Length: 453
Image (cartoon, rainbow, N blue to C red; front, side, top):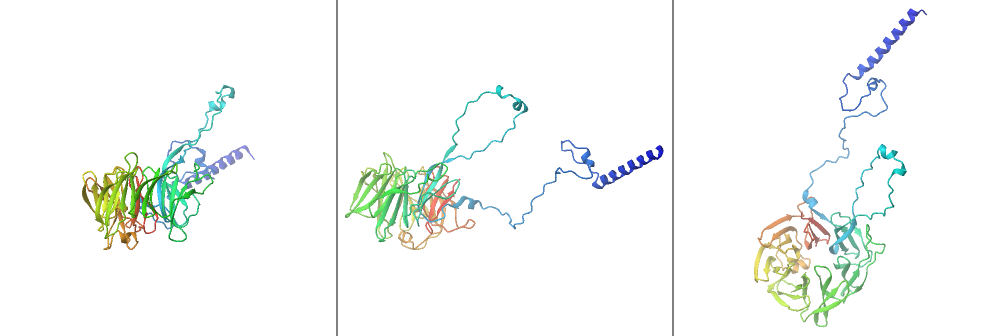
């Protein structure tokens, strides 16, 4: 081939190659990529065969194929929740230690200078002792299952029910806790269905990060048969219980830590209900006669030593009471369930304008407010007898009442929230910060939590 023809062939091949690249390029489109501040590979823009590197695409919203349609969350539903998964006989709020959630810092990449530093030039660091895990003390709940007597617990801010003990005590009617949740008192009927047996037990030791150290049994002893009434001191260190001895009613204080018992009360009248509103050097125990609609009721108070038994209220049919933490005010109602407050200093009563029982209320820690489960309607009947006997059940709303001003605020109606339930509230209890109100639904004995903040 001549030199002239060879050069002409090379020129034709170059023209064909340029034509092919130009055709493919314009088939992609001529829009240039936006400048995102990163370097651009010039040749990759003209690569007709693509690249093995992933290309950035505009993110798209995933399509929900489940059929779920989001709805507005009912804030009341979040405010009120069921705690226990079973009926309970009693519960307590206590403080429990737990491991803190640790945030692991991001791993840092050493610099080139650090990587290149000879080992001999680095500072010599001695062996460090392992740092113990960070812990915190948080409020928790313990409660006794009515059917088995097993005890469960959970933290208040994270409801995660866990079984704590496995000691079987069937058909527990009533349960109390003392000694900061470390002691439990359970009442139940013996096999003869007539004798009330009372068991005082000590909790197994706890394991940090778990529930127990492998031992899940409760060890303890039995108190006298047919104990009629129990109340726990506000600090949880002692209990006061009443039982029959001969023709008299005996009142005894038991210290949970030492198991020491001291008799402080002896009465020929055998129908009493006790409360222990405050303890210490000025501590008092309140005693009320068991209420009935057509029988005048009376209330007394005495010191923790059993001295200075003093009459507070009397001659009120169906009298039921609830004493304030400082012992100066008494919440009471009659057989019409009208709620009143009696001032022991001025000896004056004031009506609060709502109808419920003091057993369905709890005092605020400062004694200037009360939280109550208030029936939306009350049928005619002999109160409180019909409610005690289960002939009548209420559908309650929860109220907060300011004692000084008389102002009342409805906190929540459990039936009105999404998937609401009728609640007949009892055993109302506040945590120490008054952030939560706990109660038991008398209809099924489940434990509930109401967020107050």
